[in-house]
Length: 173
Image 1 (cartoon, rainbow, N blue to C red):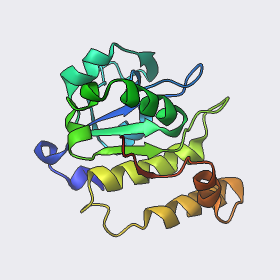
Image 2 (cartoon, helix red, strand yellow; image 1 turned 180 degrees about the horizontal axis):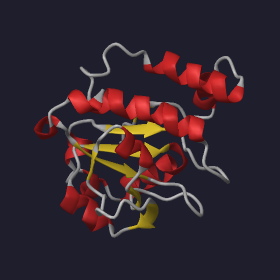
Image 3 (cartoon, one colour; image 1 turned 120 degrees about the vertical axis):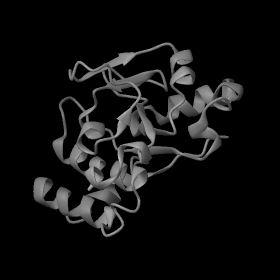
Image 4 (cartoon, one colour; image 1 turned 60 degrees about the vertical axis):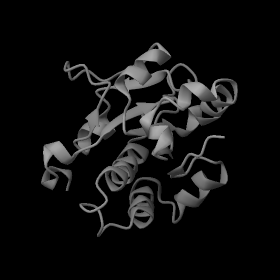
């Protein structure tokens, strides 16, 4: 679906607040993230190696990249909110914050990779970055279809939402 979007119309994005060896704030990022790669997103953190890795970066690097969209792992959202409360001026420098383009998706790593979460996250990220290309897809229905196939759960999305780990826009402040 994303391949139909011209390259010059694709916005930049950053997967942040990554959970690896614990939760992290905005400085915990995913380089060469499989979700971003799957939807052909312009991940500002990609280093060209193709090697998936999660790393801690200097927060100033996020400002230098200034992504149009930021996707937060639900496991790190509380740390981002805490950081925002202490440093709102930092976030005011970010295009994604100023344009209301900060989103949360469920953590796909909890002791091991949860492939069903990553797959559902692809549909969510794609629908946010390329709304016209994904217009015919009901993301919630697709996520529940994926969860039912992998987990046998009828409405696992409700379970995620009940623990504040669902898909949503993140409003800071």
